[in-house]
Image 1 (tube, rainbow, N blue to C red):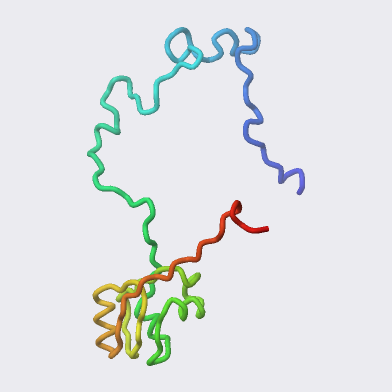
Image 2: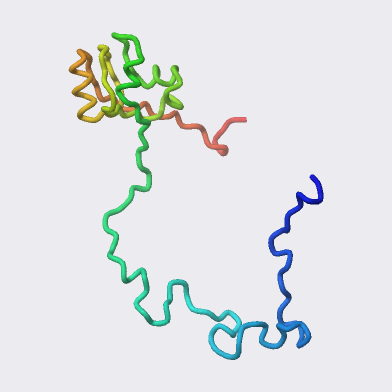
Length: 161
């Protein structure tokens, strides 16, 4: 590192306010005189707009809910499946071995983008309607299978030493 590569650190020139008349920001320390914002701990709550109807109330209500633990599927398109050998069986184990998914416990969904020309037996968690039609049209079959549960690791307290 050379001297011309040095950068000014954040807060390097922070001003010490309320330190006497000569500093320029003595007495009221840049807060003005009197009022809510000049007081210690003063200031309005977040979202307060001076009595005007706040933005959170002006906007329409957001309905529905979002799942706390959604199932995130790994998506694989038909065009990618067409790379496989004809007559092969597509399972979580085979996809994990080929490096298409991270591990055996990742749920997989087949999507209908591209074309499938080979007969495949697909045993995965989900497939779109168009993907299922394409698999069956090519002479293959799709079977929805439950995902193998991840084995539970013993907790640190219960682990035998």
